[in-house]
Image (cartoon, rainbow, N blue to C red; front, top):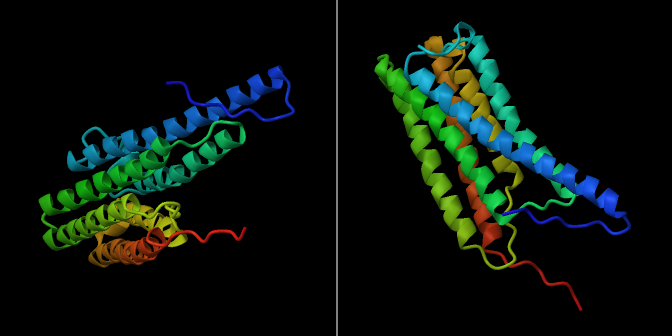
Length: 225
C-alpha cells in the first residue's frame, strides 16, 4: 500500500511532486538501513558461530576490523532515524508500523550478536565468560518484554517514545558488541570489561524501564480551556 503524503500549503503542483518524491526516497532509505543492518548483523552472527569460515580475513572474530564494522552497524541505527525525520519534513509521516518496526529490528540485532558471541565462547571453552553474556542476554529479553507490555498498556495519550536513558542504553549495548568482537576479548581482563559493559546496559535498561513505565501510566495534563 502506498504511503500517505501530507501536502504543504503554498507549493505548486510541481513543487509538491518534487517534495513527495524526496520524502519517499528518504523513507525508502530509512527502511533499507533498518533492514540492511539486521541482515548484515545476521551474517556476522553466523560467521562468529561458524568460526569465521566465510568472513574476510580482516573481519574475523576478535579483530579490529570486525570491531570497527560492528561499531558502524551501531551508528547506522542513528542513520535510519535521521532519514525517517527527513522523510517527515518532506511529507511522508512515520506510521505506527514504523514505530514498532525499528525497536523490533534493534532487539533482533542485539540478540543475534550477543547470542552468537556467547555461544561461540562457550564452545571455545570460555564457559564463565560465555555464561555471563548469556545471562545479560536473558536479562535484556525479560526487560524488553516488560517494556513492550508497559507500552501496550499505556494510558490513552501517554508518551510512549524512547526516553533519553534508553537511547543511551542502546549506545552502551553497541559499545559492548564492539568490545566483544575486538582483540580485547582475547584477554581475561578484557572479557571482564566486556561483561561489565553488557551488565551496565542491563542496569540502564532496568532504570529506563521503570522511568518509562511511570510515564506510560500517567495521563497527559489537559490544557486549560
